[in-house]
Image 1 (cartoon, rainbow, N blue to C red):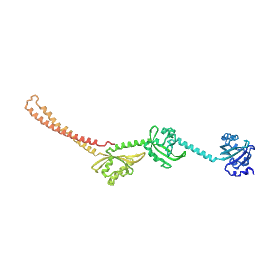
Image 2: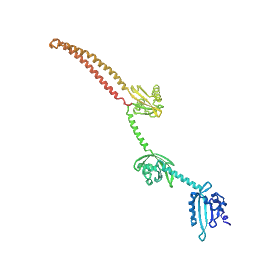
Image 3: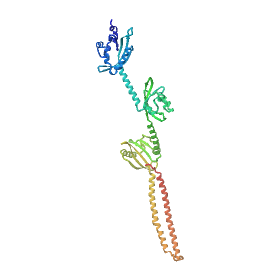
Image 4: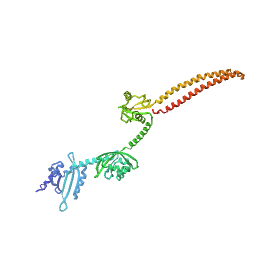
Length: 462
């Protein structure tokens, strides 16, 4: 039985198996699989046992030739390289072993050749995928890290994390998640880790940088296996500026609310459906006084007790402002005592769209009453002027005439006594007029103080 028939079972293997006689430079055995891998026939292969050298990829030839030379030094060789079969590139795993005769002289070389193209391409794709993944990880503009979900120890960090937090990669890998958090947040951290499912998103965390700067962050991540450890990869979203801006907005809003709520004017705003958007304390107190209930955001500003005619009047005004008008008018109400309000209504804009109406109501009842008092005061001032121009003029003219007829040359003249009597009467008359002027002036002064006080009590809000 020849060698080929002895090893017929080898023809069923998926790998190429061969045995080459170094002395005769011929195959002692070769199966069909070797011919298939080389893309030729078995007969051609037997006639040209060194055909494989012509198929080695040019970029791998020097490496393969050098390795194969080790066979003649009695060493086995196991290498992977590329061959060109037509226009196709194939990867092969080539295992060769030298066999010497009883004198130690190389007699045959045995080999197993395997087509590993699919495996190699998969490895290359995996390597490329890992490279891309690592590149995306390292070059992501957001801080990224991988940590062990059991120990909380950092397993990997990217450049953005190093830049943001100020720790070197070596420092990070010697730390845990707890090391970058305030002590009071650690318990919450331990209670949260590993309980958020495969993908997680968590808000409102605080981190410390190496320099002690406090960062406010949101994190998102997903569970994974990293270097045979249960882990999670986390992306950090720095929201420190937003939090600070929000705090500043809250403080500014509180200040604004405090200012608005200390204004006596009624301030409120409504949406396009006449529902309350916002209001100050003066408006809220007024509504509660008139209707016995509070008006909350989203409630209609029209109480069922308001007469239909009055509702229609207000709706008409709101609609005019919702179309872009600005209104200023007075409104008198008898609820809770007679009051007159000056109402300003302005549109609320969102970019180019009108979304509501802001209203300011100022109690001008005292102002109107003060204006009436001013009118009466003007009448009284005219009376004072009349007293000054008419009633004083008569006595003064009489005095001037009496002085002219006084006998200055003879002071003992009995006629002078009569003149002095007339002068006394005229002075008394003039004194009475002066008293009237003083009384009128005092009355006007009191009215002035009342008017000034009333005007001072008006809101300065515009």
